[in-house]
Image 1 (cartoon, helix red, strand yellow):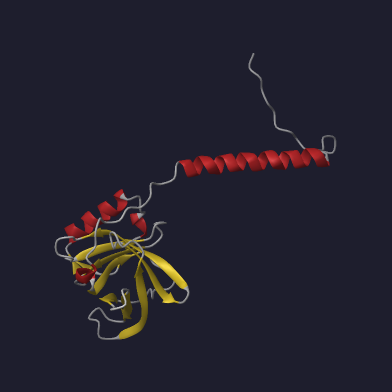
Image 2 (spheres, helix red, strand yellow):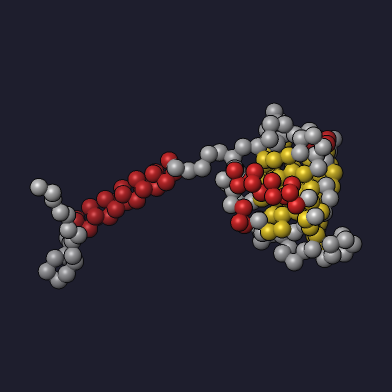
Length: 199
């Protein structure tokens, strides 16, 4: 015979004692912990990067084509660039600039920092520092390994994303292909805001 378990109804005639209340809370915590464990067991696979990055070729000027909006980036910028250069001390200098115009003649803000290589086997994982002592992960997850004309940068938690190119205009089919590849890495492409131009 199938048993039916009815929920406890709290009323003036059916109150939990202090001990029962504590046991109820403990059971609830156990259930919530188990549920959280179940969710973590179904978590996304670790984000992967490209196999190898030649930082000499990666250095230079990049234009932001698309990104996940962040509070530290001007939302009204018409053009955003990132410029990298290898320093003799082994790190990479970083300069991000936001412009009022798409032609890049009226700068509205800029910031300079350093990027330190955290995975010297691939050079695909770096940590960027704009303000000491804070550093943020900078992972190169997609790259034009032949010509270094485009790249996609993200974070291991997938909350940040930048689509970069050597020109402020990108081929529409290439952009759509990159979006598909980004989605295949379990990154929410609906959050991408297009800032460059497509042709």
